[in-house]
Image (cartoon, rainbow, N blue to C red; front, side):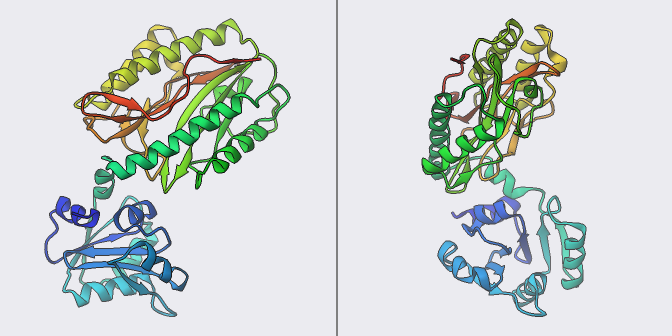
Length: 356
């Protein structure tokens, strides 16, 4: 059963119902098409609605899907309406978590008499469990990222700016075969390490700095996500202390991943370790998140994550401690849930590396 058919089955779609897809990552997942536009699907419909720039691409990437081309005066929603009318479809589910108010108003205007209801993130639910091909792409992306980390450890030195390190790291991933970077690389040196999502800037690495590197490659549309914090020269006793705490939390939580475990219970393990060490207030984000076509997907390892881990889920485990004015430490692996536990897709040392 193809992915579109699986979505229809999961939604228990009636013969008179359609699904309208706007979100690019869901479009790619369901059809293979990576350009701009919309999808319409039902029991008897597989349609991509786009413009002239992408019609050939639809044929290459989404064989079996009908390509409908917009034109002057006939937009995407007009063509959706035509498809629904031609096939006697009287209701449609749409991505209410993604479509703008203006986009919704356009659908209402162009689809008179069609009942619009929420898709309730059904495609995202399907996407949580990766198939063998998806896992193979993520293995490649994580392998490239791990190789890039090994490279940057031989390059980083005092005097380099955060921006230079970002460029070196991203160029290395691309030169190794990545399609692109999975997200904008984070490089946070010295006191900037207290900013979990620091933007690399002109600060120069100093001897004794801890440097946090959060990055990942994208291969065939699938993301890697890893973080390592390294020392450039001998770090302070305080930074060694918090590194050891974060490492214990990361290793404990990664080892605890297994089918049937509740996401929030894994998150609680990290909070317990970091809290007992006296740094609970300095770990303010969730422990991890799903990864796939998007860098942040379901399920979430967080205080409110109620999903049960399932074989095929791919999640990050990334505890951190962030001390304003001093610095921070984060360690992250991307892991796949297996039948008996979990396996890291990242192959890079987690122990503290002191680069001299």
